[in-house]
Image (cartoon, rainbow, N blue to C red; front, top):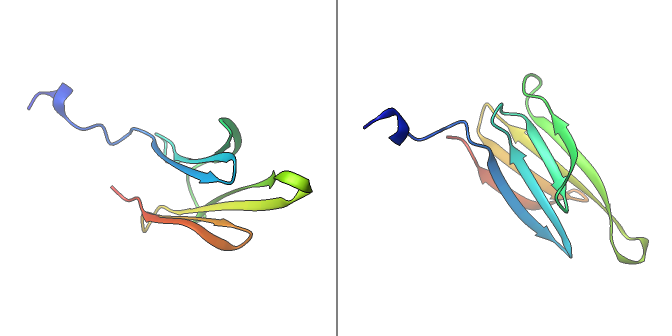
Length: 97
């Protein structure tokens, strides 16, 4: 296997999570930072490092001034990603390599 055939473990891992009519995307970046995008716009980025978990959040305004608080936690030591909306689970996965 040549070097060009080796898998690249430094590619960003993207998780698209639809929420109502909004596009939420959680990204574990090439440098292991945690990013939260809303409708294609970066809302929060947390650099890798202690403490574990990395944590990002944003407030989403929906119709009729209804607000949803989206939180993502990435436990890099365990390879777990948890996303909640107003404290309720929305997405959970083992994302370790």
